[in-house]
Structure formats: C-alpha cells, structure tokens
Length: 157
Image (cartoon, one colour):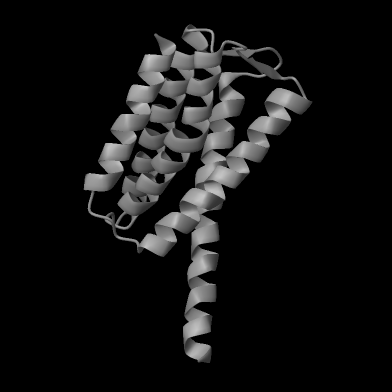
C-alpha cells in the first residue's frame, strides 16, 4: 500500500507541475530539478547507507517507492515551490509556500515510515524537516547564482 500511495503522490506532483503556470524557463526548472536531485541523492546515500542513521526496506516495491520519492517527488516539489515564489510579492507568502512544500514532503515521509519503507534509527523527523528547509534555500540561492551567471554570459557576448 505504501508503494501505491507514494507512486500516486509522485504522479500527482508530476501532473501538477505540468499544469501550473511556470514563471521560470525550461532551463531554470531543469537546473533546479537536477541540482536538488544531486544534493538529495548524495544526502540520502550518506544518511541511509554510510552513517546508517535510518534504514530503507529491502523489499523491492518498497525500495522502488523510496527511489520514486527521492528522485521524482522531492525535486519536483521544490521546483513547483520555486515557481510559486515568483508569483508572490510578500515574504510571508513565500514562507507559507515553503512551509506547505515541506509539509507535503513530510507527509510523504510519514507514509513511508507508516508502511515500513523507512525506519529511523538515530534520525528523526525534525532532522528531516531541517534538511528539507535547507534544501529549499540551497535551491533558491543556486538558482539566483545560475541566473547571475546566465546574465553575465549574455552581457559578455
């Protein structure tokens, strides 16, 4: 059941991404997606495989659900959140959208924990929330750096 729910959430996020009005270019969205994907894959490898702070299920469908969440849902949620930042004018609105994004990702992690896809050993949901917030901020600032580099390249030619 955990596999079905996590795949449904990935499908839902993918559909949402395709239908929203994107304020960023395709290249900027791709940059944010790939940036968060690389950071998230490395982070999960360190936490789950190297430090053994948490454990992923050995069952094939459960492990596949974890990979779908890690590689599709999480990066796309951050891409959607950053696209929604462009539509908001106030700082409070941006904080609300970040909190909503993190809450959705925590909900997906809670599903994974409930169905024994993930098991925390020396890790907690609070650490996960801090990581997700940091990942959002890293994605925002890396996008700003990317835009600056892109703009300098255009001015240079």
